[in-house]
Image 1 (cartoon, rainbow, N blue to C red):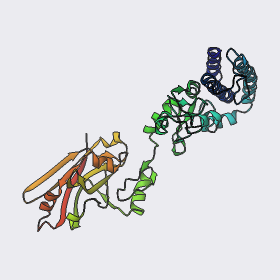
Image 2 (cartoon, helix red, strand yellow):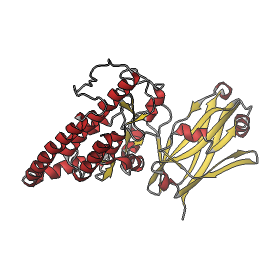
Image 3 (tube, rainbow, N blue to C red):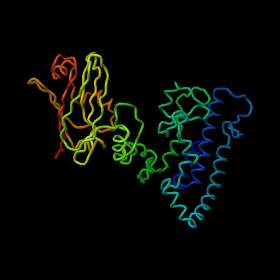
Image 4 (cartoon, rainbow, N blue to C red):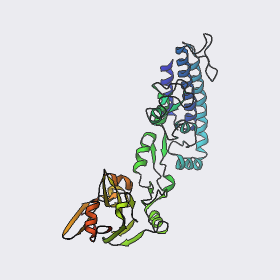
Length: 368
């Protein structure tokens, strides 16, 4: 019975990828989940020895033909509705085009039942295989399954290792727009490749690179440049060479500090110069590094050098600027920049080593 239902379902889904078919798929997924729930309950002996009922009121005893009859009933009804929908579609081309533009080639709206079924009730993100369900049919993603310690957040039953294969198959049939559609990306993607695209989408907004506070502003590069200048009052410079002096009184009392960000406009692109003090293990250090305001593949087209020294001694760092897709904390923790031990930094500062007066020079160039 179950094999027949699955076979009919997949055949129907393959040839009927419209809104009516999706509505049928929602009903079928619901019935399938209820059947699994009833079957699990019957196997565990949690129901009485009389008739076995699920939420829909359908008998689910072994050998029952109700599931098959319901499936066939839905198929006949949906076939009629599909033919009717095709006739209506021919007389409403403008409406159809609008639907495709908003929701994808399949005309599936992001607010329909299937899309809602694919949302994890815990993290609210879309679910990807393996999609898990409890014996009562409640679904959630594999990440949250671990987070909730294998206990269903809806009914508090043990989740076990039940896969919701029907819902995974339904998801495979969907084609959806990029989440950054409103920002200019108008491509349509199969459900299972949509997430990968969005991680690398050229219209994906950037986080504000300012390191002095946890700023939540996001946007494209021109928006962030204006935001840094107007809201954070950062220093803005044109050119590919720089000479900066960092000063701090009582540096021995400072374990963690961040100096004002500096932004350079070089080769028509923008770069952020960071300077921070922190503990590297048990040693207090200073670190300077450059980040590129753009994606990583563009950042690799540039290189930069940093230099600090005094009294006939010098430290030089050369590297590739990191994209602002990586947070300043991630870059700092990876030690991808010029690192200066505090004692050496104070030596370069001169005097009695009681005040930090560190001069850092550098340049940016484009790789051929």
